[in-house]
Length: 272
Image 1: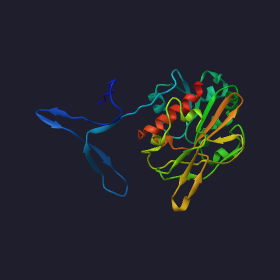
Image 2: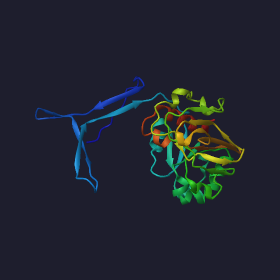
Image 3: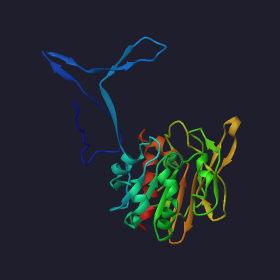
Image 4: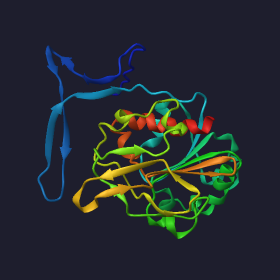
């Protein structure tokens, strides 16, 4: 059985647990089960309550944005973009090669897209043309395949730099940049309640034309020190090219409020 739950318009931001039960012949059933089966163990059923958590987040987005998305590897960012209220279109191989991309306010490439998507690599120059004529391109983290050619507007290399401490301090470096103030104010609270990590595969060596927007401080003994390259912007022609090593792809499915606010601000750069 499938059903939809919609929050009322006046609901307060927060976390709500929603339970489901069925009554049949006078008996109420409020549990479900998950099958756990691996080659090295016997098949088992894990019984749990039939409930889920709904999160209501205070977040705003520049209205009327049209966002193009180039698929990467199994990330769940597109549903989050739609939940924010943007019009989302998945960009096909033919569109990358032949269509006029100027109708998109923002184009986002998925996680590790330059590793898996040959059409993206082959037509990257068309994305740079899109940026040069005023578009906003947001590139989510990539691995070392990104270093096999110059896919950014200026020379840059993906590094092994990462911050696996989800509580690591994050400091904005360009506090007057639009991404930290519109339409959502980015504060210390934005970085609270992240899960598992801050980010990975940050940009390392890069041309001075790139601007670091944040720096992170990792206290983990094997990775101590200040890390940059997690959120980087380059102005190219009339547009913007951004690299996002911050783990939005992991935070958004977890319902991390600050990740939604930051994503909304990044997308809203395409509306200025």
